Length: 220
Image 1 (tube, rainbow, N blue to C red):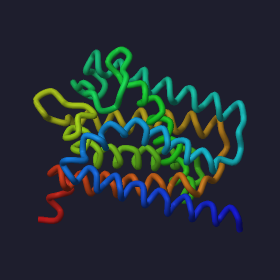
Image 2: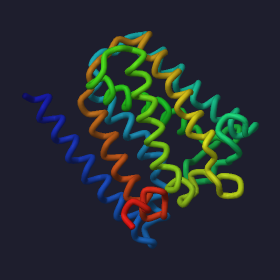
Image 3: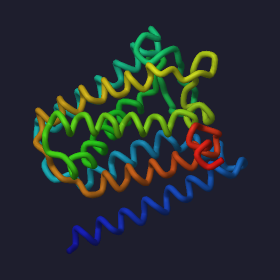
Image 4: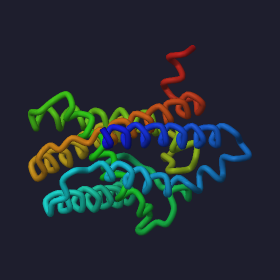
C-alpha cells in the first residue's frame, strides 16, 4: 500500500511540475528560464524513475553505462558526419557540450530506453517483439519532440528540414539498445517510469502543436 501511495504521490507531483513547465514555455517572458532548466529536468526525470527501480545489479549498471555512452557516441558521430541522422547541430539549451554534443544526452538516452522498455514490457514479453515495440515508442517520442527541439534551440537541422533518415536511425539504434538491455537485464516492472514518459509525451505534444509541428494538422 505504501508503494502505491508513493507512486500516486510521485505521479501527481510530476503532473504539477510539467504543468508549471508547460505554462512557463507558453509564456514568452518565462520561456528563457524554462529553457535553462531543461538539463536539470532530464536529470530529475531519470532520478525519479530510478527511485522506483527494484533490482540494482552489476548487469543493470553495465547496461545503463553502455546505453548512455553508446547513445552519446552515436550523437557525436551523427553531428560530425551527418551520416546517421542527417546534418544537424546542437544549440545552447541542453547545456555543456563535449565534441559538439551536450553531455546530458547520455542521461537522456538511457532514460528514454529505460522508460520505453518499462512501458512496452507491460504489454509484451518476447524480447524481439518487446524491443521492436519499445523502439517504435522511442521513435514516436522523437517525432513529437523534433519541432519543439528546433523551436527552443535544443538542436537544429540544416536547411530547417528534418530528414526521414533521422527517424529510421532512431528506430534502428533504439532497437539495438533495447535488445542489448533485455538480454543483459531481466524484465523488472517499474510502474512510475511509463507514467513519467506519458506525462512528458503529452507535455511535448502540446508544445509540438504550439510550434506548428505535424500533429497540429490533425486539429485543423
